[in-house]
Amino acid sequence: MGVAQARTCDIEAAKQSLEKGLLLESPSYADLTKIGSILVLMDDAEFADPLFISAIERYPKNKYLLYRHISHLLAGGRLLAAMDFIEAAICRFGIEDGILTQALKIREAVGPHCTDGNSGSGGRNGVTVCTVLNGETHGLPAFFRKAKTAADEIVAVDPGAYQEARDLAHIFGARVFRMVDHPEFNDAWQLASEMA
Picture 1 (cartoon, helix red, strand yellow):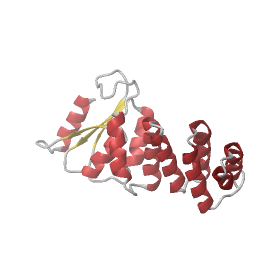
Picture 2 (tube, rainbow, N blue to C red):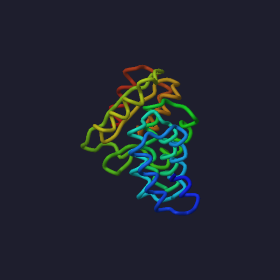
Picture 3 (cartoon, rainbow, N blue to C red):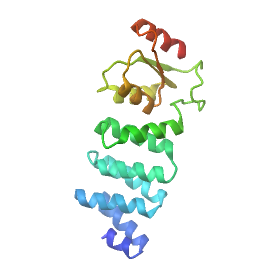
Picture 4 (tube, helix red, strand yellow):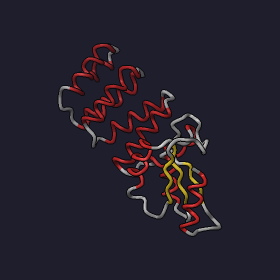
């Protein structure tokens, strides 16, 4: 119903129908796809954001809604909010659909995670989580997501050639240091503590 109303430019009626359809009924995957597209096309963040968030919470396995919300945030120039949802998507669905490259570009634009607003300042009196990367990437998204809730910043050291682990660390806002000359594990921990 909301789709038809949106096509006829009855925006207020479309909003009411979309809200009702999304929150009160059990829409099909095809319906969710249409609703996500319409919310993006409406270009009304004040209306769309709460609906997207409610829909994402109600339908956590629907990748399309989450990715459409990310697109909506990016289109509105809200890079930090988009980054948060990108991290959630990686934790929920893994690294797929070309999300890694886009996430790295967005993280580059917003800078590393730093709760005091001084990205990469180092040497503060806050909490810094330090880690040494290895070839294992399976648990990294969840680790970094949790670390961000507790730490002012994250420092990650790569003592080897672990590109995917470095990329994940960057995406989740870690300041990443790569060791080329000193691949010993203890040296990596020493560098991590010095960079904190």
